[in-house]
Image (cartoon, rainbow, N blue to C red):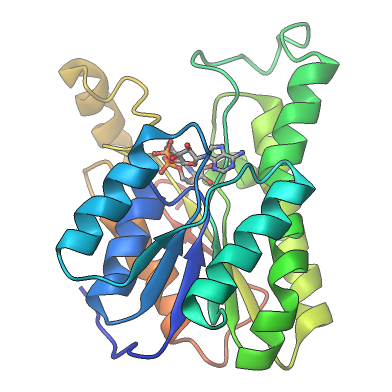
Length: 255
Ligand SMILES: NC(=O)c1ccc[n+]([C@@H]2O[C@H](COP(=O)([O-])OP(=O)(O)OC[C@H]3O[C@@H](n4cnc5c(N)ncnc54)[C@H](O)[C@@H]3O)[C@@H](O)[C@H]2O)c1
């Protein structure tokens, strides 16, 4: 694992109470940063994780809210910035597949307007809302943004065409805002491949499915949340001459 001295730095991680978001929160805290964790107000994990990490001596704050709601986003950014005295890093990690089952690309009927509107609002407009709300703080700190996309954006397979399209939009937004917010703020993305031990565990608990999936991955294992947290951490704390990029992190799957 890479490390850095992030004492004095302040991070806001959306969807940070589980999976890749939580692993990112833990890495940032371990490096000495203060972290505000955003997650849904209904998330049981949010208060549980904040209590657990506070007990470990970390400076961590809850910033609840739904990224698909502008009022919630403005309020959670305000809470985070006030608690930490500003924001240096914004990690736009919150997203939803909107379905527990895979919807084949040929099945258009299962992707109705309400499904599209939800996924676009959470996965695509959500990160934009968070960036817009956090902008004054990020400008002041000359900070960095990392968006969590997916290999689905590049045709790597996923739960639905709708989901893939929202993530492709996020890759595009990353490039556009990298130009729009330079030179003060860097904007990059990480595109994870398959993930084990996150809230969306799919069928990797089934040993046969996991073995079949591993066959397809050159590095021969399904990624853990910390495998994705590390490059997110790097694009926040390092990579000072990198902006507008989407780093594919998938054990070689797309290669
Ligand atoms: N799990 C995968 O297979 C996979 C693959 C590629 C990319 N990703 C991406 O990685 C990121 C993290 O996924 P994960 O696997 O760690 O999932 P996860 O379910 O473990 O974590 C996502 C968190 O986001 C929160 N969340 C959901 N909707 C929200 C909203 N509207 N507002 C605020 N918080 C919200 C959830 O409550 C949850 O705590 C997502 O952007 C996802 O699209 C996941």
